[in-house]
Amino acid sequence: MKIICIGRNYAEHAKELGNDIPEEPVIFMKPKSALLQAHTPFYYPEFTNELHYEGELVLRVSKNGKYIQERHAGNYYNGITVGIDFTARDIQDECKKKGLPWEKAKAFDNSAAVGKFIDITPEIKKNNINFSLLKNKEVVQKANSSEMIFSFDSIISHISNYFSLNIGDLIFTGTPAGVGEVVVGDELELFFEDKSLLSLEIK
Ligand code: MG
Image 1 (cartoon, helix red, strand yellow):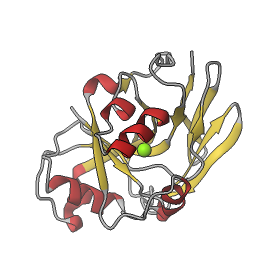
Image 2 (spheres, protein in one colour; image 1 turned 90 degrees about the horizontal axis):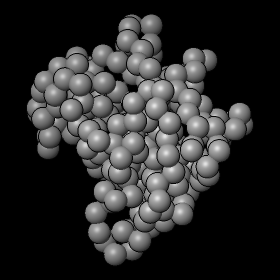
Image 3 (cartoon, protein in one colour; image 1 turned 120 degrees about the horizontal axis):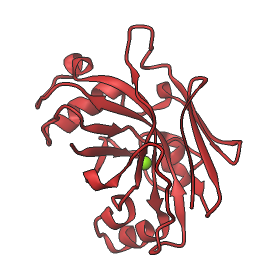
C-alpha cells in the first residue's frame, strides 16, 4: 500500500503558510513505514524542533484503477476517517527554500496517523462532513469537507492520471487552517462529526 497526500486543499490553510491557492492538486507521498498503527504511541522525532499536526480527512481505496474519470471516482473508495499528516515544519521550510523534495519533512516513520475507518454509506454526505482536531482538549482545527478546493472525486481522478490506485491505498485529502506545533506530552484527538476516531499522545 501507499499513502498519497494532497497539499494546500483549503484556501485558508494555503494562506496561513504563505502559499498560493493551487490550480491543480498538490500531491506528495508517504511510504508504508510512515503509517502509525492504531494504539501505538507517537514518539517526537529527534531531527526536528518544530513538529506540526495537520488534521485531515483520509480515504481508503477499495478498487484498483488508473485514468479514473471523476464521475466514476466514487466507486474507488469505500472508507473514510480522520488522520494526522505530521510535518517537521522547520525541515519543510528549509526544503521549500532550497527547492528540494519534502520527504524528510513529511514521510518519516509514523508521520501518518490514521483513525478508525467508517464505511461510506449513502447517509454520509461526502461534500458536507464536519471534522475537528483538539489539542489538549481545545479545538484548534475545525472544518467541513465542502471547504476543500478539490473534492474527493476530483482528487481521486487527478491522482490516477499519474499513479495507479490499489486496494488499501490511503489518501490524505489536505488540512484546513489552524495547523500548529506539538510538544512532548500534548494530547491530540480527532473527530469525524461527533465521533472520536483517533487520539494519541506525543511521547
Ligand atoms: Mg497535509
